[in-house]
Image 1: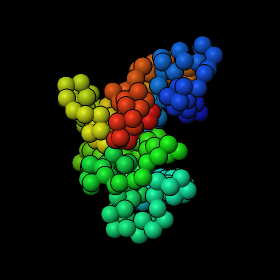
Image 2: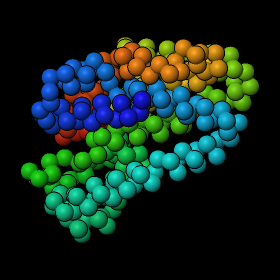
Image 3: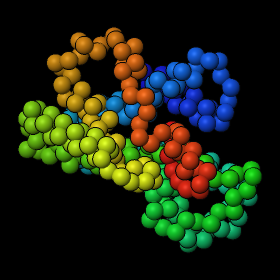
Image 4: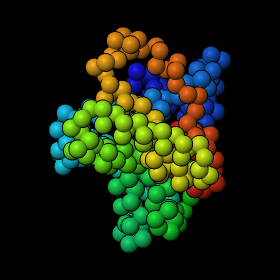
Length: 254
């Protein structure tokens, strides 16, 4: 399932780059979306992981950091090398205090949108070879980190003690998140850095995890039902991301 979602995201990025594909492939991308599949899987797995840790928040967060940051920092090291190689960042600017503050936020969150929100945008020397910061595909990192922080808050010991209470809390927050997404007027950048706007997708996976012992027979060995039931698009899609990129920014996949 994760392979299917990854291929879908790859095709969305390829569509943005106007790569020509045989006719059925654009239709597949249009009627399925890899990102919500990933968020649902994340909700399922992260909730299960926290439950198995018996509410040990320190161990849970440590393991999450060990899982996400090594690959993120390797990716950002490659991005930094590209910035220098293509002249968007002079080598001497690597020790500039403004750049160090800006890059520290990106190292912590993977999000240049959040860095631009917290700090003045760093004046990179964009050019034809590198017209924007190539971290757009990392937009879900800051949301995942937000989910990691939300999970210990909603599964407090009194809630964690009773499965029905856990289901009720997650369901309430999922409904609230969906309502927030539907009625709140805000820009795409704010939505892209606020996990509450996407928790409703993560919450679906979390509810599946909490109820899995009762509903597993409905889903086990029925992979094809999952991608077919996914919504066509999240509120912030590859299209909105492309808009952010071309207007000099922002952050976010597609």
